[in-house]
Image (cartoon, rainbow, N blue to C red; front, side):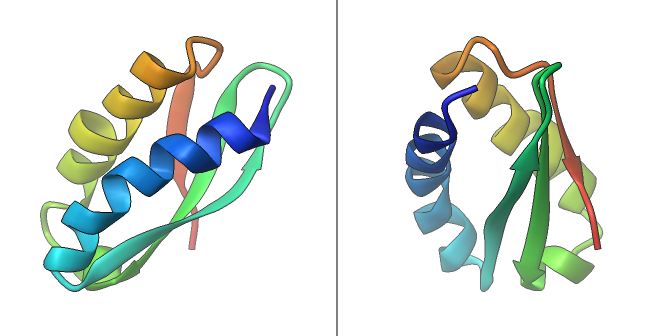
Length: 75
């Protein structure tokens, strides 16, 4: 899995997250295509964090990096 492609896709998402006081950190990816991220700032405690993760971050990553199977947030 190309980590640079994942970082590039996350860079496209970051401005929207930062506008709301948050951010996302790429942590790791496994061979099956599961990407681990850490939500930071306001995103870490936002009630809509799950929606942001699945409908925003995961959707964009799957579009930009077809090998991505899922995105999971860790603490």
